[in-house]
Image (cartoon, rainbow, N blue to C red; front, side, top):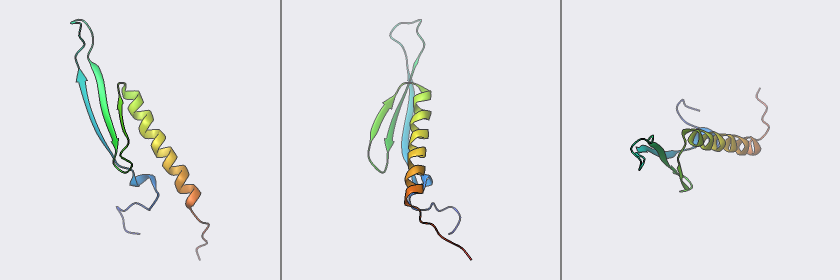
Amino acid sequence: MSEGRAKPGSSAGLSWMIRCWEEPREQADGEAVFRCFVRDLKSGEERYVSDPRELGELVLRKLRDAGRKAKGTQKNHKFG
């Protein structure tokens, strides 16, 4: 396999579009609100998050799920 190419079914093949911004609070003394829009480019699933931890958890969960799926589809190969 050449470098820079992901194996089919590997977590390296996941792609998202993530757009983040801050929105001011309605009250002058309030802190700005963090917002992100996330789109899975393969499934088209879209989601908004308002906490940076949610963004990290979402990506981590998708990577773990992809890893489990990849392990479930791998065959036992002997090299030699």
